[in-house]
Image (tube, rainbow, N blue to C red; front, top):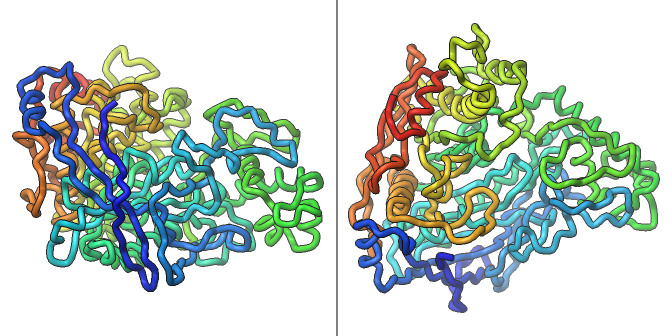
Length: 610
C-alpha cells in the first residue's frame, strides 16, 4: 500500500472569536510509481523524490459550524453555532451523517430496540459512528511556516456526493492534504444531513424559508461560516471556489443559482452533477410524506417514544400533535427504517418484517423545487440568468459504470429522461441514432451517461449565450486508476491527488498500481482546480509560492475552452485523460460530436478521435 500521510503530535492553532481550536500537523509525501513501472518517466520521478521530502500541512477535524440538528432542532433550517471561550482539540474524525441504508446487516425493524444505522460504531472502518449530530467540517491548510500570498491562501469548499443519501466529508478521495501541500490551497469539506433527515417535510413545516430542503441550508450555512472565518486559518474569503461531485456537484449548481450565497464565493467547479437533481415538486413531496407517515402511523402503537421512553409514539402524537411528535419522538433508527420502507434497498438484504412497512419503489431523495431553492434546470433562459461566476462543469465518459441499474431502463423511462431536458422528436432509442448492431444494454448505458450527467452539463453550457460568462466544460476520458473506466466522480481523486485509493467506496482493495502517467494525469488535474481557486480560470499560467514542490519533471498542462450556445447542437467537449497506448499523456483535445453519436463515445474509449 502506498504510504501517503501521517499525523504527528505537533499542534497548530486557530482562533475563532474567544475560542482556540487546536489542530494537527500532517506529513505528506509525493506519490511514487509502483515498482512495475519501468518507463523513463517513472525512473525520473523516483529520482526526483529520492528520498521523498515530507511537506507539512495543517489540519482541523470536526469543527462545528451549526447547532446539532437533534431534539427540537430536528427538521429545521441549520442554525449557526458559536464556540464558547476555551480551547478545543480538533484532531479526531467526527461522526458522519446517518446514511440512507444500514448496510448488509439483516436487522429486524419490528423490534422496539432496533440497532439500525444509528448504532453502527465503525462506519466503513473509519472508527466513527453515524449520528444526527453531524454538522461539522474539516480543514486542510498549507504549512504555518509558509508566508501566505496577499489576502491569504485561496480556498476550495468541497461538497461530497452520494445521492443525498450516503457518503461523508471524511472520505479519503476528497481530503485536502495534497492540494494544501502542493498547490497552496485551503480545502474545506462539510458534512450535511442526508436522506429524510435532510429532506423530509411535514405539511405544516412547508411555510418555512427552506421547507424540506434542510440539507441545503446546511451547506449554505457551512459556506457562510467559511467566508466569515477562513481568514483565521490563513485563507482568503475573496478567493473561494465552491465545488462538489455527484449530489455535491448538483449542490454547487444550486449555489450558482441561489441569490443569497452569491457574495460568499468567487468561482465554482461541478463534477458529475446529476441532471435529475431537483425534479421533486409539491406533488412528489406530498406523496413521499404520505408513504413515510403510513409507516409511522402503522407502527405508532408499539413504537417507544425516543424522547420519553415511558410512552408510545401514538401517545406522543395524541399529546403533542403529529408534527411536533415526530420531530422528537422518532428515534434516528426508526426514521432510517421508515425511509427504507418507501425505497427498494439497493445494498444489502434488509427484510422489512411488518406489513405496515410497504415498499414504495426506487424513489431517491432529492431536494425540492421551491421553498428557498430555485434550481430547476427548466429553461435555457432561467439557467443563463444565474451564471454569474466562472464555473467548470465536468462529466465522465462512463458515468454509468458505478450504477448497475442504469442498464435496466425501459424504453418509456429513457424517453422520459430525454423529456426532462425538453427533447422532442424521434424516439431516442430509434435505430437511426445508433450504429448497426448496437445492443440494448449499450443504449441503456449511454442513455444514463447522456441524460443523467453529460447532457446536463451540455444544457448548462449551452444555456449561456455570452462569452463572458460561458462555462468551462470537460469530459473525463480515463479515471482514477490506470486500468479503470472514467466512472462517476472519478475526477475527484485526480483533482485532489488521492489516486492510490478507491474512488467509489473508499475501501482499500490492495495496492493500486500508480504509474508515472497517472501521477502526471493527476498533477495536471490538481493544477487545474488550483488555478481556478487562485485565478478563477483553470488555464491560467502556474502560480508560484514559496516552498511549492514540483511533482513530476515535465508537467503537462490541460487547457479547457469555454462553451456557449451553439445553434447547431454540437458540443466541443474538452477531453481530459490518457491514451491507452504508449506511456505519455496526450494534450487535451477539443472534439466535436453530435449529441446522440454513440460511435464517437466508443472512439474516445478506444483512444482515437472521431
